[in-house]
Amino acid sequence: DPALDAGTLRERAVTSLVVARDRTTLLTSCVEDPDLTAQHSPLMSPLVWDLAHIGNMEEQWLLRAVAGHEAIRPEIDSLYDAFEHPRAARPSLPLLSPEEARRYASDVRGRALDVLERTAFDGTRLTEAGFAFGMIAQHEQQHDETMLITHQLRRGPAALTAPDPEPVTPFTGPAEVLVPGGPFTMGTSSEPWALDNERPAHRREVAPFFIDTTPVTNGAYQAFIEAGGYDQRRWWTPEGWAHVRRNSLTAPLYWRRDGRQWLRRRFGVTELVPPDEPVVHVCWYEADAYARWAGRRLPTETEWEKAARHDPATGRSTRYPWGDADPTPGHANLGQRHLRPAPAGSYPAGASPLGVRQLIGDVWEWTASDFLPYPGFRAFPYREYSEVFFGPEHKVLRGGSFAVDPVACRGTFRNWDLPIRRQIFSGFRTARSVEDA
Ligand code: AVJ
Ligand code: FE
Image (spheres, rainbow, N blue to C red):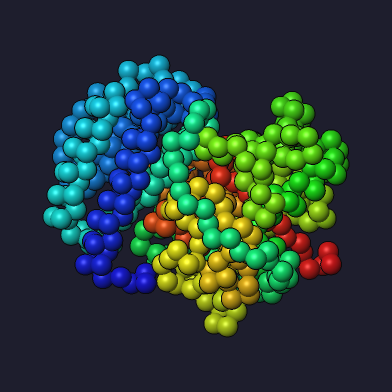
């Protein structure tokens, strides 16, 4: 699959851009204009900022960098530069109105599709295999996930609906899987649209470890709460303990106790917390504390990727747990087809050769690891995508959530965030070393 021909890649670029724009349109037309210009949380931009920023990035990379066009509206670049204005400050900027933002993004898109038709896929590193077009489709989809996070934060009645995932009989297989020790190939040098931080492919030695078959569920997490997990310092790192105390955290974001049961608000609807669903909206500190309470730990990023990609039969690393084929609805819960994770044990067709399930889709999974470059990393095409975020302050998340489109999801894909963040669609699974057995 990494060796796709230029015609297939070109078709894939058109489709990926169109699919992303359909989703952007849904997310910015399901509420009235005042909800697009309002700031629903200081953690997030107004939705209308994301919309114009999507257009502006596309203009900068596809129209200016690839095709050499002049700027359409040079005066707006700085408004939509994520590094110039923190999210909390964006509502007070002279932003384009919803109508102007829609017109700007669609004007850019019309020209970008003309550029795509006329651009050879081998001129420079930027256009080789259609990289810039794939990068921009992924960028738009990443902001679509960001906008979905904003929709979840928004107060008021539901604006979005989607069918629930298929119910499954509760998972009764083994709770953990042994991943044998030995080297495997991490990262990629051949995936055409892989972003800079996923590169290059390199060998890593991994000690044997056990990893949870499925993500940790609400029911399991509730046991941690009922056992007094949030009141006992011993389960938390010093920073985690300070954070939960200072902010009086007692449960995942959006949870509310109602007598003996837990309720949660999800996209404008309040429901009972479903026990079999992977827990979502926990920060790294909560995931880490739960794991310690359970006598376990978070997997490292390397362990996670080995569990997701290593095929013991061939010794090769595959693109996804199930092999090299692109995701289908039978493999994983991706693409905002549902507005929630699927019950633990869903998608047997998406399992790894060793039987680990739901590594892709459902919830982003916190790992123990800091976000760091791979040996041989080179920033491309801009330092602000990954390089400026490398270091101990960001933790890596893997696997994608129900809100991630397949174009922005691979066994090699790396996400990162601060350990306090939990408005994102974040959950986790746990691991243990074999020598701890
Ligand atoms: C990779 C999700 C951390 O949203 O901050 C969007 C993706 N980069 N625009 C983010 C991104 C530039 C990024 N994350
Ligand atoms: Fe962006």
